[in-house]
Length: 596
Ligand code: M6R
Image 1 (cartoon, rainbow, N blue to C red):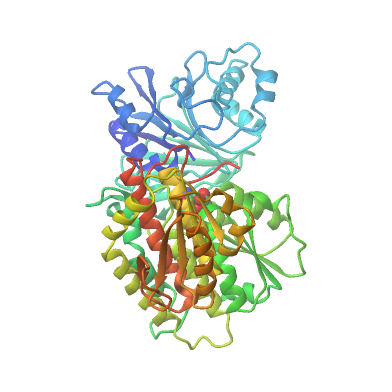
Image 2 (cartoon, protein in one colour):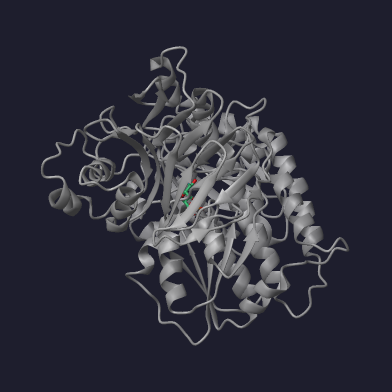
């Protein structure tokens, strides 16, 4: 949530900042701003709206060797120009950008800033004003920075310019992600390596409560307590082309199309080349000791977790519970003697999931993170990591990460069986082919979306067992990008209340991929059909009946979510497209939810 870029070096920073912000826009896009140091002063430009709105505001050329930029997802204060970052101190000496939430900002304001009038409603402005207030008491910038940081409660990633010392850029991090990029002629600071991958693939990871003084050729890292840190850079394994849209109009469609390739990539990463599953033995040993597995996740990852529970129980025979991360603290389950926590997170940065990890680590419980982001916070802080190998997922609506999570959970569950000599790898590779078969006919879903969804203010997805889990995901996809109110229901549950909402023409998508539950879901569909609903059946070669509007290939039933979710992703995509919505950047959302 919120994206930060910063640059100090020998070239003009403006281009670097803007390119980085464009790539970080997935993290928040309600306002954006940059500050550039040149000719003895810091010039700040900020604007409500997207990076393109900001660009339209900038003078040309805007030249400087030191600069910071920010793209915002509002937490404190409405998304407007005044609350957009960067924020400056009263005298203009300090200017900073911030990602995170300062929980005690009101307390700090009344303690330190009674004489400093604030110009915004943000928690961030308190930080910059406090640094200036402290510097006026005689503290150096470093001392004022460290003192302020040690007073903050909450999360922060910060990049700060001191106008009186333009050969340095100050950086700090706690809980919110931040990386230092090392170039030949510059140093950069970014929320995600994709923001400066065009300029460098060498990064240094920052840990919580660390500060950095960057110059154009050095990065000096210290803890808040003054301990010097030496850390080797790592090579970011992203390719510039992975983050381009190519011929696609939207990242979401590109990412839907990439799903067969992601399954193949997982097969190559998690098999031994002879058709057998090969999952890290330490993660396996950890899971085999579990008396119960607790999957913790949010949103789409939570929905993947529901499918994962089926695998871990039905294939591996280990009792498993799935928890919405933000609810865990209120509904902490009774834990046995050997619980193991499995965190599912595409970004690896989700604050709600991390909060659970931090608490469970304190209690000493083992943790495994399944994530798409190598080196992400959840990955670093867990005992074991299994990667999704899905390549960057940029559209806010998650698609390929969902199928990748399910495939990894399937392989994990299979690897826990006494014998792994089975057909899993072959089955997955057939699933990849079937995914392609569905995707090859994606235009069909445009017509279906137009026919069933466009005129409606709401839509229901019904399914049973595995199909029910996929319905929850299908409904989330549709609502988040098309704003059609959509809910997923267990087919049998409709008649216990929700059927009251069915009117003439209400779209109901009935998913039926399991032979055992097909008769029941057909009955549920009749109940809504007789009340005027427009039912769109999505069935498989094994469950199809005359009149079904969409039939997808069959596969082993446990793997069906990998296929059946694709029609739902495509329906959501085309519904949003037809409605003229901003598919990749739906309103009010951000890709990486780094606040609790
Ligand atoms: O990065 P994570 O998987 O932890 O993110 C969890 C959710 O925020 C995410 O899945 C969200 O629900 C997606 N926008 C749904 O498409």
